[in-house]
Image (cartoon, rainbow, N blue to C red; front, side, top):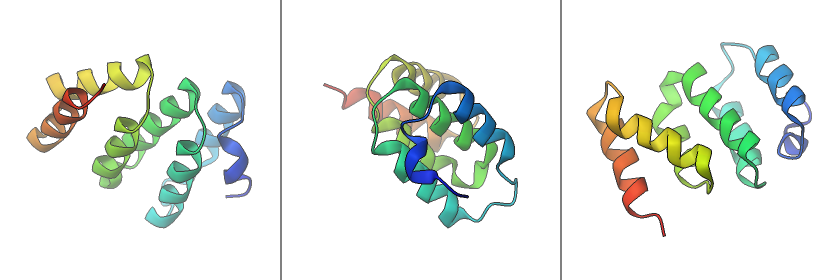
Amino acid sequence: VAGIALLGEADTDTHKTFLQNLPRDLPPNRIREIASALLTHDGEQNTLTLISLSQRYPALFDELLGAVAERNGQVAVAYLTAVSRGHEDEGARATARAALETRP
């Protein structure tokens, strides 16, 4: 996946195209690289892409939820609130609640 480092600065259309072109069988280490690149830049679009990754690659949901928890902004808070109230996994709900409780 070329250009991962630049993804954090990309526009909405680029993020959408990037997500559409990601293979479903992408190795976990590559997904972690993408998440890391997104975390190095501010912006709600980067948070939305982290959320999309968490939904697309459920095996890494907990890690990606943690990445979303590191983000500031309304999108992160809204997603964490939704997970804390309605995710099927109690562990995910607890992680989201804890992330919300530790916010400044």
